[in-house]
Amino acid sequence: MFPSHLLPGRALWLALLLAGPVMAAAPAALQPDAQVDGLLAEAAVALRHDANQTRRLAEQALARLATTPDVDQEFRARLLLCEYHAERDLAALDQQVRVMQTLQSRVQRQGLRAGLLTCRGEGSEMRGENAEALALYDQAVSTATSTQDDEMLAGALFARGFIHSLQGSYAQALADLRQAQGLYEKIGFSLHALNALNGIATTYNRMGDNTQAYEIYSRALEKQRAADLQRDSAVTEHNMGRVSERMGNWRDAEQSFESSYRTSRQIDYLRGQAYALRGLAAVALARGDAHAALDQLRRASALRQEAIDHRLGALMSLTEAMAQRVLGNLTLARQLLSSSLDIFRNSGARLEMVAAYEQLALVDSELGDWRRAFQWQDAAKQTSEQLLRNQIDQHFAALKVEFDTATREKEYGALLRESLANQQLLQQTRRAHNLQYIVSGLIVLLALLLATLALHHNRNSRRLRRLALTDELTGVPNRRSVLSMLPVALQARDQAVGVALLDIDHFKRINDGFGHAAGDRVLKLVAERLTSMLQPPEFLGRIGGEEFLVVIPSTDLRLAAARAETLRAHIGATDIAAILPELGSVTVSIGVAISRPGDSVSSILQRADSALYRAKASGRNRVFAEQPPHPRLQEVF
Image: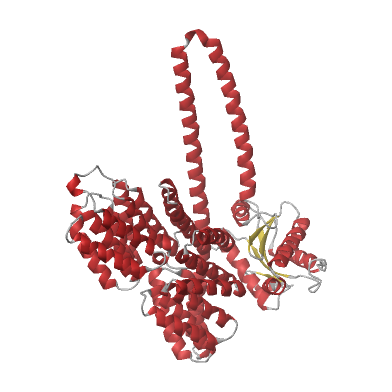
């Protein structure tokens, strides 16, 4: 994903300033210079396609203000320059901050002070000082809230939401980004709201919900292209490429990165080009062409020299290290990995930390340092477990926030409707005592209407809940549904619970060889077979991609493994010639785990995932159970 300071929504909050300060009318002699306002408006628009033009126009505005001073206009011009220098020259950004700090006591629009805090936070973020950036964004949110400046508040929430997302506080990130989206919609900035929606998509992707993230990006990209928002489109195309990269869909990733590169090059967006080239290097490396990957990274490095971005540099170093390891340059690969790991640690980017740990383990094992290789692999495992636990915990926290918000809105709506009805009734009573029978009839009719509306609302709520808990493609319960039922099953006393994590073998080959439509049909067929084999109280759900989870209550490890073997054999015996004549059959690998005292959702799923990994590593189309306390009890089919 693009880091938060690169997403266009972060730049667009500056354009909100052009609506003009919210204040009482000033005396005629102090009215803002209309020509300066025009220059600032044009400069803000240029952020979308020509940042150098933004700088020129902002400097022209400052030159004019030297003869006709206006503190608020000068402040707005320097905020635009702050955004420009954030990607290029942090010393110049600091200079703008110092000037604005001398001006802030004289601004009439007090909410502009929140813009200064957001600018300072952006500078800290660019330096990789995310803790300091988060503190500044907190102050910006507080300042914008106290001054009742919705425009500045939306920008500060947007910036803070991305830091929370990067650091794994997904529930808080979603709360900030959704509030920012609502504020943008409230003040009529629909395109800014669209960029907040992109931030939500990025958060979902970091939570492991790749499918939902990709769908949101696709909808956003369509609207951005329709509005000819080229920079926004370039960022969204890159983010779609990153989703495909993490899912291993290299063909889709390549198309997205190439499109992002072309768009960025058309508007001379250097950072966008660098990010896209890093993505293309990852694609080349996945296809085994390390030399091509290094060539793309050299091109990206030349562009990055003109754009400050520590996280981009770390991603490039990680990709280059992987290429150098393939080419046998192990010492250089280790140096690159160490430098990138420091940046990932400082920014709290756990997903990238796992990748760096795994590569260091491979490099040290090839160098013969087995002890250190084991330490790196252990660090990768622990960080991966922390990431998985955090993703699951944050999923539940986000669901709780959504539920609490919806409940408050429903209660508020009910109270408002009741209050309005009471007011109307009181007014009618005061005006027409002689029409009591008519009023009574109206009350009865109103009660019937409210009852009808309540019934209709309940039906819609049940229907929407079913839709929210069902996988749209296969019709089985989705990840949210099955992970909400599993904790209940784990709480059953004196009864162990088995989980079987299924993965369709070589599903990527099916998608790449026969197309995503064929892959979708295979997913539906496997879901149908699993559903037909369920024996209550068993239940299943689609976890994501080609993975399904079957929960087997009241069992033990041996019986759960035997049950999983039955499922595997049933699916393997299915003739899919009608769907894919060239393939003939489809197989699955299954990892099985049994609950233990004190188990959480994340811990039992982690053991099942480890068993699944061993099943796939042993040739696929087989069942592996978790390592039991006594090794003689392990079952492998």
